[in-house]
Image (cartoon, rainbow, N blue to C red):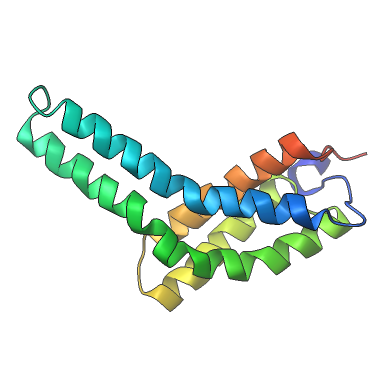
Length: 138
């Protein structure tokens, strides 16, 4: 149960790694959106029109997500920094932060899509930071 909420304390917190990971995850949906758009356009004759409509909706959501998601990343960055510093950035803590930040950012931006996006984004950040840093609790 300790691994669910705890991580190895990062003193000092590697700011360059943290900010680089946040920047990569901030821009990744846009890149993914362009890739899905290219695949959808290249398979236009194979994909039914109804499916194309849903895929292009997903494309627009992904391409324009950096326009709105910066609000959540700005709110989340200091919280994550404190959690990393004190060793409280486990998977459960990351999920809770993602839900709370998603709800707050969704209220600020005015969309309900921010809550699941915040959860996935912060869990992806936890995965990326776990890969770059020694995050397993002692």
